[in-house]
Image (cartoon, rainbow, N blue to C red; front, side, top):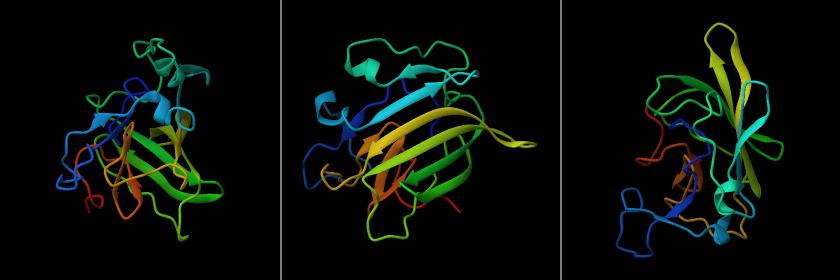
Length: 175
């Protein structure tokens, strides 16, 4: 989890070269027309209203990253959030996550569901999970080609179809 809202979110992929290291390649942006239809990102303000929406980027609009309290805090602000990741009715991950750390989504099934929903909530050490700050929908179906190192926002496929929140580096979360 690297913090920040939907602004700057895009789909990135390593150039197609079989000799590249999928975990350290320089990723390239994939055109909105290739991914935006089935993926979404919405940031919420303290009152629960949508204050930033990924669709604005693909429609040539401007995101509202400068609005205070819109979405999760940025990566340079030390904080913790509570993340829940679901595939339909299956919970892939739930728990507190500190900024600039990795979490791992795990399925008990042979495949992940067609869509993965990731909810990011405010976290308070004394009261626990708070208000919703962000909701992301990622198309994880077999109709969309997913390859090792594909990155959507702050999620990256690192190994064996496991989606984690690591932008930099691959592999399991630190122990």
